[in-house]
Amino acid sequence: MWPLALEAVGSLFWVLCLVAFAVAEAIQVVLPLASVHVSLVSLELAWAVALAVVGSVQLAFALTIDFTYDRRASLAFLVGPLYPIAYWAVSAAAAVRAELPALIRGPTEARVVWNIPRETSHGAA
Image (tube, rainbow, N blue to C red; front, side):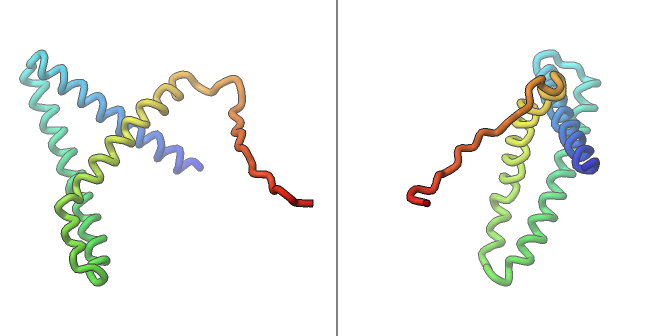
């Protein structure tokens, strides 16, 4: 379970960095600070290029496998970059909304119990 916990903490750290860069960029738009802006833009650009390269390699590998079955699969390169962007944005928003407050507040006093309604079998003896 420790590798899962480390992956979760690493993912949350990544999301918090993303939020911090977005906030810093918003502040930069309002209050221009040239030296901070240059360093943030270069780091953001490097991060974006790294994500784009990894996503393109993954998509190329998947399409290479799928090409023998579907010749039109290469059209996925037209919209392929949009899926990871949307997926990461939704995941980041969910992590900031759920995980960060939970880490700050800590565990609750009461145990969480799921009450799942079960279907009863009608007519069973």
